[in-house]
Each structure stands twice: as C-alpha cells, then as structure tokens.
Length: 312
Image (tube, rainbow, N blue to C red; front, side, top):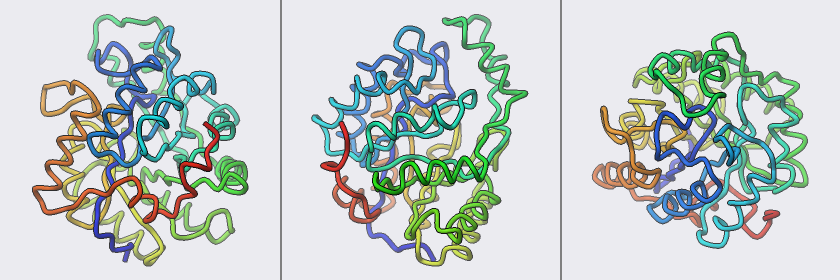
C-alpha cells in the first residue's frame, strides 16, 4: 500500500504546453500572468506549483530559462509553495532543451515522464474557426503524427542531470500502466530512490482514460510494484478533473488541478483562473473530510531538499 498520509497535497499546473491562447483568455501566457496566477493559486491552497513557461510574444510553449526567470523570483518571494519545473516542455522539443530550465534553477521538484506515447491534441483544432496566433493550428494538428518521446535513455539523462547534486524530487508522470513498470525497472537500475512520488495522468488522448476503474487498476499496480515506498496523485484531464480528484482523495491520494489540465471550472464554463480551480477542489476535499497539506507539510511528506536549496 502507498504511504498513508493524513493530509492531502494540492498541486496546481499553471499553464502547461497543451492549451493555446485562443482557447481561453484566462490561460496565463506572459511572465506577469504566470506569476500572478501562481501566487493566487498558492494562496488558495496549492502546496505545489507545476510550472511551464511561455514565449511572452506569442504565447507558444517555451523552455528558454530566461522566460522562467521572469516569474520564478516573484513566486519564491510571495509564497512558500514548492516549485515544480516541468521537464516535459512540449512534444516538439528534445530532452536537452526540456531539462535546461531545471538544470539552471535547481528546483525542489521536477516532473518526469515515464514513457513515450502518442500525446495527441489534434481534435482540439477542429473546435475553433480562427486562432489568435499563427503557430496554434499547426501545433495542434501536427500532434496527430507526433510522438512524445521519453525513452529509457532520456529518462536516465534526466535522472543523472537532476537527481544527483541538484537533489531534485521527481513527479513521475505515468500516462498508462506500462509507465509504472518502466519506473519499476528504473528503480531497480538505481536511477531513483524510494520513496517516489507518482502522478497518474489520466484522460490524455494516447494514454489511459480518466475512469474510476482505471484509477483503481493503476493504484493496485503501483501497490504491487512499490509497496509502501511511494506517494501518489492524480490528474483528471479535461472534464474529469474534479471527479478524479475527489475519488483519488477518498482513496488516500493527492490531487492536481490547473489550467494545464483543464480550462473549465464546470461543464461549459471556462475557469476564470487557476486559483478558482484550487478553491473548488479544496472545497470538495474539505467537504469530504480531507485536510489540506501546507507547503511545509508537503515538503516533509515528499522528502524535499527545501526552498533554500534552489537557484532562484
């Protein structure tokens, strides 16, 4: 069984590399917007802030460390939240590009994708007649013939670059059950040390669907592979965001929300901000009887190096 935690950690994924500026005016694309929404999400109860950057000129996904630098300092000075920098970047980027911000800033946490998959966004392109930026439609349609590459060599490179002197804790993103077996192999190879932190990513086209029975299966498989040497959380992409969070918390897991994972606050209604989603999931969890973990409590649960050990 996974670690039995008394409190639930809320993560918030602020902008990501999936949604495009046309899809929602609330999606933060400038450093100022990312910083403001991250700070608000932390104040609303998010202990972990999962961060991507955007090109401030056109809102395209970016892994330029300079684009991260513009918002990391403000987040660090105005919150005590745990900063989690993505190494996923975008499906169009190579692994050297994707890890560059984390190598430079040495955050407490980084995401790590545990396998390659057909991470496809192309159906989203048919929902819009016009796009704000020229890059959006080709980016979305091009994903139909793209593979989100995360080979064992890529995984080893990320582990070696960030898991040693940087002492980064990884959010191991598992989009399907095979990714759990990939992680188990990597553990046996000595790439990572238990306890680990799993993120079940559910509802992405190309990965496992966001259904309760699939969540139970993922959790049961993780129990078999990792015993009590792991913590876990769940992403319900799109319309299943809140439903999967509620179920995961009842099962003893942690939760992730944010505009990276869903642009909506309820069916047919766009969220006004990341903080609105955090407020909603917090209300759901507290109504169910869960207590929300503070950043300090989350650091202790996950065994993090501390905010004073980062490079920003």
